[in-house]
Length: 57
Image 1 (cartoon, rainbow, N blue to C red):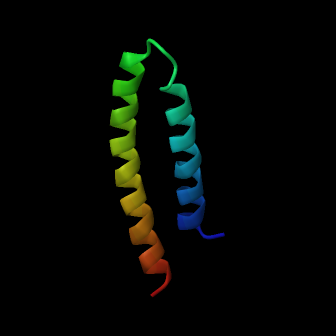
Image 2 (tube, rainbow, N blue to C red; image 1 turned 90 degrees about the vertical axis):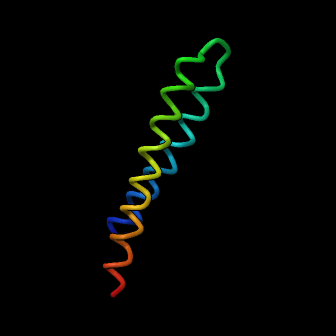
Image 3 (spheres, one colour; image 1 turned 30 degrees about the horizontal axis):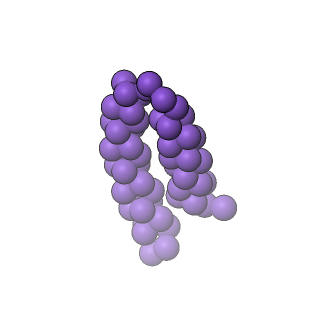
């Protein structure tokens, strides 16, 4: 499994975990935190895509 594939799998697991944790009643602050992390996650996914593109050249 390439580095990009491993990073993608890790991010998938991270998103699932965050979504589960933020569906607990009374955790509005946690939801805000999750949105920030999701933005970071999107940036990391873009990086993984670039790495994957370079690997397949």
